[in-house]
Image 1: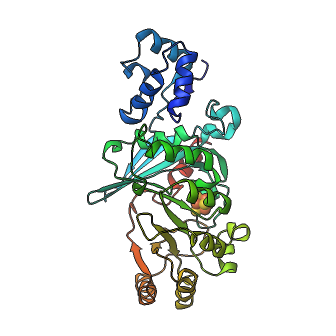
Image 2: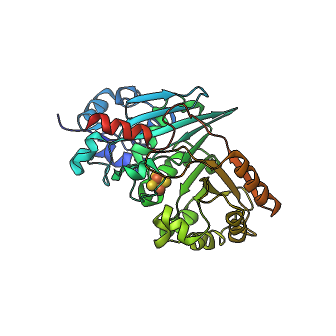
Length: 359
Ligand code: SF4
């Protein structure tokens, strides 16, 4: 059967053009946007204010495009990890399998993390990743494709907690600024009045610092920013994160300093702590020098050990004294609680397993 084209991920203008091409009135475009992003329907049949004939015509070529949940792991602490089929494409109208045969066995993850009143969904922007960070399971799997805006938004709709979510973070599989056009569009859908209508304060984009697109993101969006730092020393960081050679952390910080983070918009720096690698007072000193005077937060993160990577997580004692040193120097620093440790918690674990099972 011919694959249907997904409506999810399209703007009201694009939906209007589709409506007109299928013989529906122009206002059906706005109606479709409301059904997709506000009422979060799964089928065209649920769009009951479109005529029955109109829906029948649409369904010959189009579908809503919410991905099915392939698997869901639930942690003792309430964290839930969802697995979805990857259906990536540079062009939303093409099915992934048309562009990359590997995608047949690819999957992406979204993780829902409850914390008191908050329910945060961590979503993926790519299947796999090109960036090759050594400590990351997703990086190990290589790159399989960009997610379309519809596939990004589908994660927010498909999880059981969709209507209870308070926050979304782009911290799952992939580097969001390596798929900027689709991510920008997904951010627009999440924040536009015709879309989810969320405040940008509820959304954080996390990046390792893809400089040209970081510049665009800072100009074009009001969402929060998180930067993966992990080591303040250029040579050491390059050993962990190849991106350092193209776009050094010092350049990333220089760019960020040009923007205002003293008001509603926040910037944080993610710092995964590895025992004996980046957890010394010398490292804390270098972070203080790098970030001096910038209104920001440093999140210290425990490392979930992964196979074939020589470092383990830093000890609690080391992390406490590291935080103390940063705070003494005037930086705000927190130690991030580990969540979902009893499930395949490290980013890319569940999808990697799925790939192995399939191949
Ligand atoms: Fe890609 Fe992020 Fe993993 Fe680095 S840490 S390889 S950018 S997914």
